[in-house]
Length: 415
Image (cartoon, rainbow, N blue to C red; front, side, top):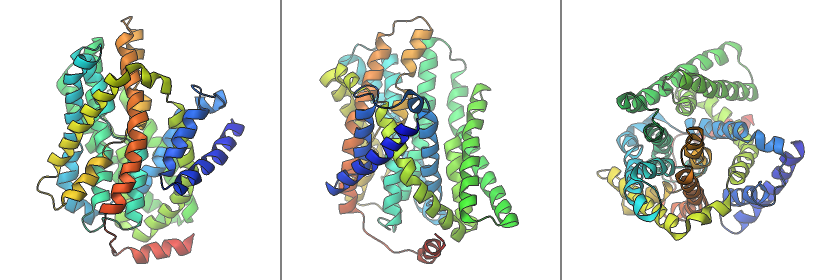
């Protein structure tokens, strides 16, 4: 496994550099590198490395979501709260319902099978969107209206909604779903539980840090360790049927530390920024390695057309969510394209219906179609979305100066 890690570090840095020189997002180079080195193309990655893929991707995602929490100021959230709430479910539901309705006319799927596909595809990719929004926030671009913060907060909730609705349709399809209202009630419960637990954990960690005053590096290590345990708690609670959004808890932990100790938050965030250099390579190359590009072509133009129909409906949902907001037309366009990329959830959930059908002894044909379209959504939207977000963001978001310069300066000096 060590050799594969070394190869991905060196090749990942090279791919990142090449794509940045080409004025394209570095993550695109790492995604393509992972796809090329993965088991479906050249197959040069060691089995042990691929076996640890899920854990490595989760740790990398935790690092970027912790950084996201450290960028969510209460003042900005107060300004964008309503729009963030609407964007957390309106666009995803629009996309999922559209795919559920159109799917049977384009692919050999029933409406229920298309609904499962719709809410797999409907989840926006935090792996792509969050680091790009953090980049804009750090450069103070769009800070006056809190545009990157709006997208960052909404995208984190969007995944929770999509995954829960998908699980409802999967349960209906396999005959294992009981009490649908309990499933849907789990959405606000999991969000509230995640945020509450995260705020409490953040408060307790602050007390710990104030009591023992560990250096910033140790604070960062403690925070990552606790965040990994929060994710583990979610797995345990899922088995017990208790809803809990661990990744929201991770973000809320960072938010609490930022609220109470801003300088400490920026010190930890700067350490996480350094870790992200390594974590980003692991995350994007391993997401790329999960993608069997040959599967994407199995659905042909019909699959691509279905994805485009979903994206069109999703874009309408974003626009609808922003009605009455202070954003101008160009800024709303930026929000629309920022909600395009798919990767993380689709790579993790695309094969779930297929495995469930196989376990239940059902025809696996629909599951294979769902997996193929899920892969197609990654292949098409991740690179296109990343490029368009960067291009539109640079044109639309205006640089602003805010009141955190002193805290960031202190963080820089502590590195």
